[in-house]
Image (tube, rainbow, N blue to C red):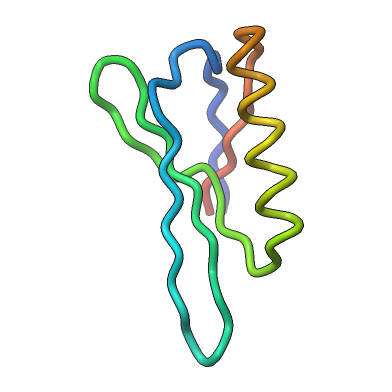
Length: 73
């Protein structure tokens, strides 16, 4: 079951990307550090193109303080 959370991207203080390798594949995980000290996982990606696209959209959302949906599994 997945949970959905809506945050305002204007509360993002920093983007953190973890790169890990498992079974010969690189995984890209985007974590968000929010004002107030909370850090949460935004998403995991196995393809660089998908990761880069999501990263760019998050930065754009933060610029205009748009709402962002985060889905946790």
